[in-house]
Length: 211
Length: 122
Image (tube, rainbow over all chains, first blue to last red; front, side):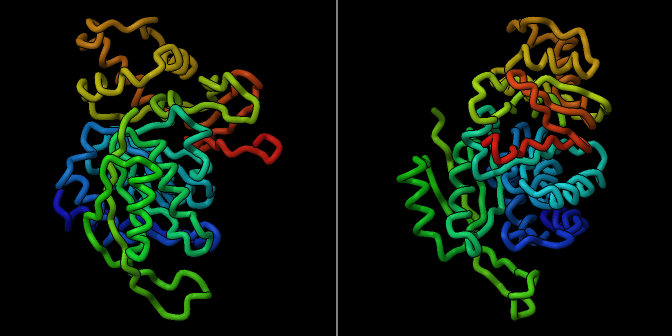
């Protein structure tokens, strides 16, 4: 699939109806999602024939994209019932898309669900601006769930910290920034003064060492 | 929820030691069509708990899976098609996942299991 085609497919995905501040429910825009997914598919070919788990799937943008790009089985996890309802209706817009949704707490999923594993983990985690460390909790969970690779978006300002945690604490075989993207964040919440704000975001790829 | 997902989930209530596999109570089951890929089936097989898949399939009305799977069966097209169907096509829409130890029911609505625990269960 071409990038343009993927982008236009993903543009049809419904956003959050009322995003929740505490969960940092920023929508993954079609632009950034399609770039992320396209890179994973075209450079690494890590959807076809591989299982995928999307941590904090929100409205299902990345899960749907991964299934469209050939993953035979995608699980989207989210704690929020309202987000999952939107995700469900988004998945339902396509016929027979192999996406399952599960309501659970991503922060503790590694300990709570030791059997839950996938070849490829994708996520657009909270950036940890509302609850400090939320981004790192997701990353830790990703290292427990993935048996192969992790693709994730993080604020560029946290790059050195992420590199250190991935290598030292989480024992990543590799941790690499694949691309610098601009996250065009529309003013979703009342405390946002500007109409929209560009945030610099890194697309990371981590390789997990299998036990 | 497909049975591949079911095969990975367990009950994590505090104190539960045998939370796998969930028993399935099905009130509505549907079927989707998934691409048949024998290589994927052989790729995923070593990670599966086969008895849980077989039992799960039976509770969704799919019978005929063997008790054990041999290397030869993994090359057998009739078997692989039945395996594919049970793993990726049969879908639990409405019902519950029941903890095998405590009997606690986790509801499944619109195909989505809710595994969130109450405060006194964490």
